[in-house]
Length: 327
Ligand SMILES: [Zn+2]
Image (cartoon, rainbow, N blue to C red):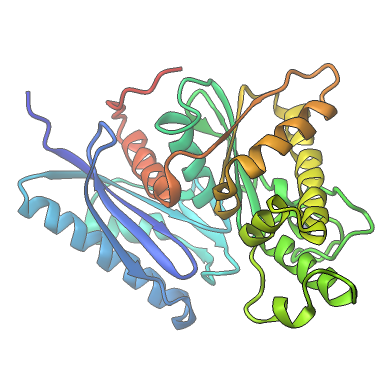
């Protein structure tokens, strides 16, 4: 039997939207990217989401396929049960009923999900966590957020805000976080925080190997700090070690709470690969007492994870699970 069923999936970020038409087996048959242009305001962003989703459904039909559902992933606080984007700093959503708007416009069952939870769902079912029943996906980029996935379902929380591992307190006397409190994990160990810390220390230290002028323009990224640390630059080594220690503290708290089989690291910082994974594994091992050490692996799906996860949410919404996931 040929299966012409597909779902339309969108992963909406502050700057861009990753969009795709996806078969029930998880294969992407069409992929598109569109600017979000969040500065236009939430109403315009929702208009673009609906236009893009309708356009993809029309293109699928023109290709002889049958769209059966829509999945949309957005950042911030998401009430998945009601299909409402409750709050988002970088897209500007405040209580936007995205699901109902999409159903009205496209006439298809629609699932609304959280971007990191969607990414975690995809990594757990189709990517680096495949085969593990209990997965913690941790995205480390500008911020740090996580998704706890159990048997292929991401835990949402009572208020749509589960998985905010970036706001675990790791350094009470540390730098202030975007949430207002000092010492959160993401204020110490996000890619953005690592770059900031390096610039700060380089600026303070007159005898540092790198001058403040060198780091000021352009700012040193976390990936560059990792590279400089690997080549033996003492300042970069110090900053990288501090970040690894803080990440290990945060992940050890995660492991104490969730006892997962696998921790999948995604986001920009995971591209540091073994420079991140090898010392982080050792630091995690140091912190395990009676808890079992989780497997620590890099994400496999790159920046398409959120979009694939949105497709899985859409398939779940209509009860279709054809992709060959294994528990
Ligand atoms: Zn915080």
